[in-house]
Amino acid sequence: MLLNIVQRLLPDWGVTYGPPGDGPFPAVMLLHGSEGAWAGWSHRDAMLFAAHGFLAFPYGYSSGGNAWNAGHITDYPLDRSVEALKALREFQFADKRVGLDGISRGAEHALLLASLMARDKIKGAPDAIAAHSPPDVVCGAFDARSFRDVGDPGWQAWDVSKRAWTWRNSHEGLLPTTPIEIERYPGPLLLSHGTKDRMWSVEMTKRLEKRLREQGRPPEVHYYEGEDHILSSSGQNAHCQLLLDFFSKHLIKP
Image 1 (cartoon, rainbow, N blue to C red):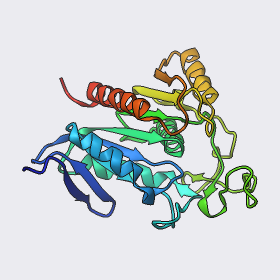
Image 2: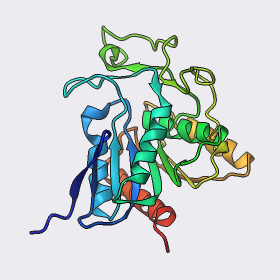
Image 3: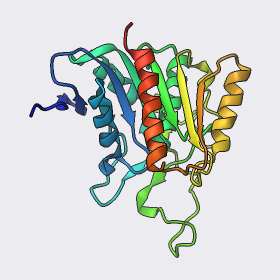
């Protein structure tokens, strides 16, 4: 039996998953949510992309943590993601077209990164972006060590004094509740959200869609009726098909 998915090291950055052979393959960088890099969900999704002909790079940007703790998203330098995208684009197995796929906090990460790169005219922006369950504004820092469900005796309110992101060594323009200016991004954009999401309200994606349409930049949008933040099996299957169709359309040369 032949190995249909091959793991390759992207030096200094992590592992990629892709088809066997020399490529080059259309590439996608995956951004995890607050579950952190150790949870492995982005590696699972990378394997799915790889099974369909993509070179997928699950980029772990959370700090600290281990197999039992998600770590945190605090003062993460978004400039580093610019470097990660560049490294993937220059990888010998990657095609020149590179997409970005983010979920939850990873969706926030993706939209912020694209808007800042567009604003500051930085080369190497993603050629297409998919964002599932994204917020429409900048959110505060996340630390798994203090996270508890509402009603738990150890529950704590979100500490808005802590920042999740930096850009060029500054928090300027990245304070919580600041609108994410994704309308600056000129490329194809896929937004998706479950209508019964209890963690990140679907109203955030609806506001993003409304703002983009008003700016003449209508995105591709899909709402999964009755789905929560974590999709059901049928919801996940539908979402995976949409992702494959979207990135095939925008990353694979005709």
